[in-house]
Image (cartoon, rainbow, N blue to C red):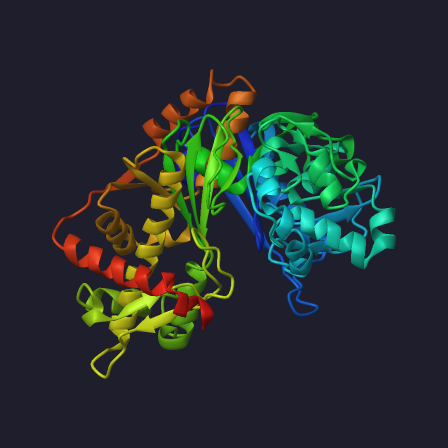
Length: 510
């Protein structure tokens, strides 16, 4: 909702929350009211750098500038309209690593979650794979924090020694605002250093990855008030007094919460550059194949089982730029969108394996690559566009099905969010492939809504997170896509053909 439309409903003294969502390429601050409406939103991007092969870093000065800019923007909007800001709720990307001193100042660039230079250290842990998974609920991967921390210690020992803490972006921002070091349990559970059953840093994993526990932040419950804004922050943002700052949890955990996933057996898909399928559980769930991650959720005492499709929107971007994008388009996917609707279901037998950046759940094969199958002289650009959407639907269904299998609970409805869900054609296609209802909020910002739910419940402005979800259900319009049986048999055939291809030994050895 825009500010003007909201203004007519506002009463003097209304209480709002600032939600700060720290993404991989931009920061977004949203002023959210008691109904879950977005009153004002400010976004600022920041650049990644690629200094060498497999290295992905970020300059923290540019990051801090973006954070202050978006916070100042929404704070000024509130101040000009005498809106009371009750708290700042922080969510964001997981698994990046930033070395900082005792003042919270970065001692070097952030090692982004995409940085894979620590792969050789993960390979060394293969003999301990089962032990690691049984404690952390995740396999060692260069994506996660622990191998990155070890990489710093091995490759830059002086920097490691000078570091007071090794933090992620949420912790870094919490300290910027409060001067308190803290890691909430949902973020900690993504490091590969955390015992998810006993809910503490694992001595075994710390020793295995050669990380000193004093380099890690103290643990707090997800949704905790970590501290309050400092005098310097209050002056910078024009706040009249200090306000609480809440650690709402990791971005994917908050997305699940924002979509109303509170109970065991609730499932969601967050669909952007990649796809993340999440199922809720009330206890740790370990996958015999070690192909899903189990982490703590954004709801205290609950867990998520998470699977991933590594390239979704990224694959769509690649195809769009290759075949369809034009400077004359009103929006960047206009021609792609039109083309995908022109082709018939099944794309004249064309099949698209979408794993351009490796296959995630359930095989976790980083060497896997995408493919067009059955390509012939009859096929058109429109067929390729349609085949891509059908391939994405196959991967989404495979991921959700596997998460549900591990969770031991059936799928009744799939809640969806993310940039790809702006395409109604793709949403309906997913419902038809799943043969399950698909549901989304029309706001699309599930992560922000989840952080709002966390803060609103923590502050006692609602009795529980369940009450907050009822507020959202009442005030935010949903769209539900019901499955059609018209092409069900064809879609089952497409699914079988693509998965057979991806699962063959010949495919793995190419």
